[in-house]
Each structure stands twice: as C-alpha cells, then as structure tokens.
Length: 197
Image 1 (cartoon, rainbow, N blue to C red):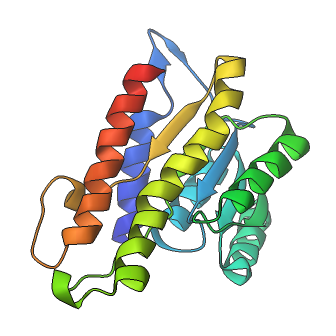
Image 2 (cartoon, rainbow, N blue to C red):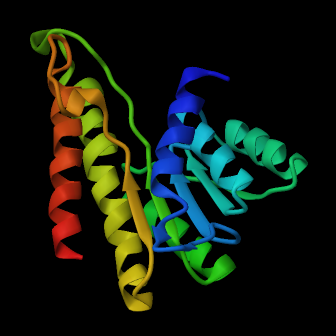
Image 3 (spheres, rainbow, N blue to C red):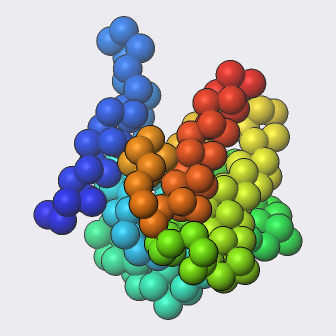
C-alpha cells in the first residue's frame, strides 16, 4: 500500500464513521464529491469512500484518468460518476454542482482536494502561471466550490466538508512561499467557516 493511501485511510477512519455514544453513522450511499480526484490523494480518497459504500463523484480536469478511476471503482462493486471540473472556472463549478444535484438530489460530503504546487524562489515565479494559478486552484477554487455546495447542505441541515491542506499550511519553508500561503489560507478559511456553520 502506498504511503498516501495509508495516510488517507487513517484520516478517513479518524473522521468516519462518526460515533455518538454507541451509534455509528454509516457512509453507505452517501454522495461524496471529490475534487482533484484524478490522481494522488484525491484518487486514493475516492477509492476509500467507495469501499465504505459511498457514491463517489469524481471531479478534475483530466477526464481520461477520472474515467479509468470510475471503471476501477465500478469493477470493485462501487458507484462512481466522473465529471470534468476546473476549479478555477466559476461556471464549471456551478454546472458540476447542479449536475450532481440533478443526478442524486444532494451532496453529503465535499472533499476539497484540488491543488498543485510550483516551488521556486519568489522572484523566479511567473505571476500568472505560478502565482495566480496556485491562488486560483488551491485557495479560490476551494472557496468557490464550498460556496456552491454549502447552501444545499445548510438547507438540508446535513453535510460534511473536508478541506485538504498540507504540512506547508503549518510550517513554511524556502521555495514554498506561494504554495504555503495558499495552504495557510485553506486552514484559516476552514477554521472560520467551521465557526460560521
């Protein structure tokens, strides 16, 4: 088992099933939207949610990888719906959320994972390709996906939002200036939102 999968497994086991006294809340048939699901942590999380009985909506830019992952999940007896999504594009976010609501009527769990890092000395980073792109995907995209899903969860008075950050969101290091800034932002946004809802 690869290390990211093991870490994801422990993280999900810590969060789910949620136990209240002697009653566990099942993940069976929960609708889970996973952004950044085409590889790495997002793909591993999608597999684990599917193994727990969730219906997994796989969202990312690389449809070929999403389709392959959906086939893998289905072959293992799970249910998955691959949908294209660039979290930097607001119209795509709105379209995707509406597609999921039309198909399933709800989103029970949002697993915000889309992100990437371009690491270099600040003066070498390209303002658009490196700086704005990381801000758009890692922070603004996460916020906008959350903003699109949250009203539906609030209306149902049910739902879970899991925002994936990074060690770089706790400990900054050379070459990580923009990436770390986005991940610190994810932590701050998550903490503030938790207090709002």
